[in-house]
Length: 412
Image 1 (cartoon, rainbow, N blue to C red):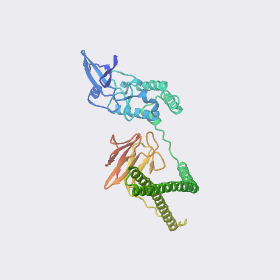
Image 2 (cartoon, rainbow, N blue to C red):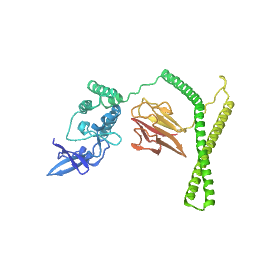
Image 3 (spheres, one colour):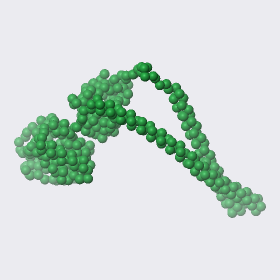
C-alpha cells in the first residue's frame, strides 16, 4: 500500500492509494465528518484515486504525550472507538500508529480510518502502547507504571471495549463505615482550620503594635521634613517680597518668589496626604469596631438547644433529577440552591469519583421558570446532547455528560 506525506500551502496531508470499489465505509468517510477521525477527501491523479487525510489542523500526539494524563487519554481513545463503531465502521480498519494519531484542541484523539487496511485493533493497541513506552519521559513514575500495567492487562486479559472501560474507570464503592470516617475527617479539618485562623489572628494582633510604632516614627520624620520645607519656603518668600519692595521687580527676586511658593505648596500637599491617611485609618478602625460589636451582639443572641429539643430540618424543593447511565452510580436529586457537582468533597453538593471529573465541575440553578446548567471552568467541560456548553437551559430528557459519565435529566 503506497503512502506519502505532502504539504499544500498551509495544509498537510497523509496520502494513500484508494481502491476502486465503492463501499459503505468509503461513503461514510466522504459524506460524514466524525470528530474522532481525520477529515478525508478523494482525489484523482494520473488516472488513480487517492485518500487525502488532512493532518495540518491537528497537533501530533508525539509532541504532547508527556503532558497528557495517560488514563484520561486512553479513556478518550476508547470513547473514539465507540463513536467509530456507532457508524457501523470496523475498528480493525483503524490505523493506530504513533505517527498517525493526532490531538484536537481539547486533547481528544483523532484517528486515521483506512478501509483498505486491516489489523486486529487489540493487537494494534498493544503495539501502540509499546511505541508510547519508548518515547515517554521516565521522570513521572506514575505515568510510566500506568503504561506498563495497561499493556500487561491487554496481553493477559485480551479484553473487549467494556472491560477496558471498567479498567480505566476505577471507582471504589463507599461503605457506611467509610462515609462515617469521611465525616469525622471533615469535622477534624474544620476544627484545624478554625484553630489556624485563631493563630493567624493572634499573630496579626502581636505584629500590630510593632507595625504601628514603625509607622508613627515614619510619620514623624515626614512631618519634620514637610515642616522644614514649609518654613524654608515661607521665609524665602518673605525675603523675596521685601527685596522686591526695596529694589523693584528684578528677575532674580521674581524667580526666587515663584520657587519659594512652589516649595511651600509641596510641603502643604505633604501635610494634606498625611492627614488623609490618618482619616482613612480612623474610618477603618471604626468600621472594624462596628463589625466586632455586630458579631458580639449576634453571639449574644445565639442560643444552644438542649439535646432533648427537636430541630426541624427544612428540606429544599428539588428542581430535577439526574438518572445515571452507569448502574454503579445512584440517582442525583438537584435542589434549588445552586447545586454543584464535582469530585472534591469541599465546596460541592454531590461528589462523583471518575476519570475526567474536575473538583467543581458544574452547577445547576433556577432562572425564573427555567432550570439551567453551567460549566464551572472544568478541564474537560460539560456536554448536553453531545454538544459542549458553558451555560444552557435544560429540558426534559436532555443527556448530560460529565467526564465519562452520562446522565438523563428529569424535570420535577
